Amino acid sequence: MADIQVISHGELQWDAKTNHNFSELNQAVEKMGGVVDQLRWTTSSDGIVFLNGWNGEVKYEYVQIGDKKLVSVQGAIKGNAKATQYTELLTIPDNVKPKNRMIQYHYWDSIIQIVDSTIGVRSGGDIKESTNGTWNLVFEFTYVC
Image (spheres, rainbow, N blue to C red):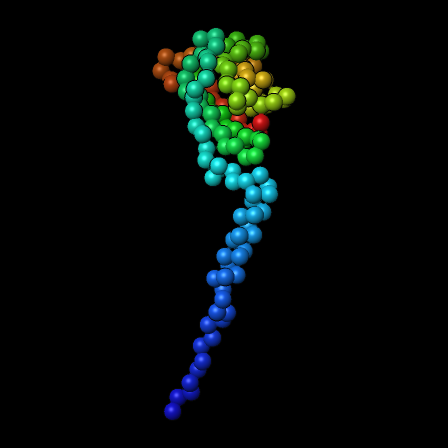
């Protein structure tokens, strides 16, 4: 006759302990400022204003986390700028501007920066709009404000 083996199912009240742990997790989240709007990203191009003849596609995304926002601003734009001169490209809305700092992004020989709500460029060479291209300057900034 074969040996009979007993299968152990472990603890019988596992669901009560698990639900208790989730309850504690929910309480901890509430103490830290509550649910973070389920980490929903807001994506928009509203409030983008191009300057000095520049145009193209720019969007910003952000997620609210407590009293801060994690922001990403991306652009593929075209226009003209003279070498070594600072040229303002566009403005972004106040609700996504970095606070009290300047952020820089390097693209080839161009330095694109955000100061307050203005994005501008300083390039080592002339930036010239091409008739056969869709953009001649790209950037992506990610920051907390």
